[in-house]
Image (tube, rainbow, N blue to C red):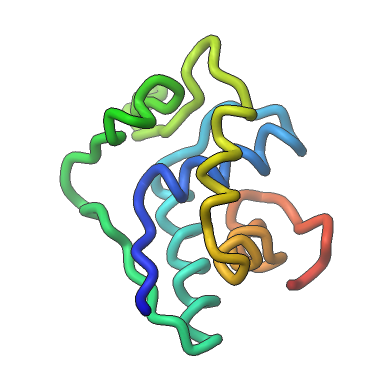
Length: 126
């Protein structure tokens, strides 16, 4: 069965790691897409079909269900960011991660994928 990765899946997983390790509440969209591509590559290398379920070059919207704690904005250079909203916490993001199959969580937290965000997995290469 294929896995469809949505913007909130990428954002939640990246922000969980960035908040835990670097206390950063935002991630550049370009880094997020590269992170997602590494996740998809990792899943495909295990024989799992995986795809993005959002446009890479068009307008992106956070689904209403997740818009109370995630937002899309721009930095001072005009680069698109996904960030945790003011008042939201890392606890708001965890339900997204725990709803995923274990092989997805492994792919989101592997050494190779976290390297795109400028970090290493605390578990090594999974």
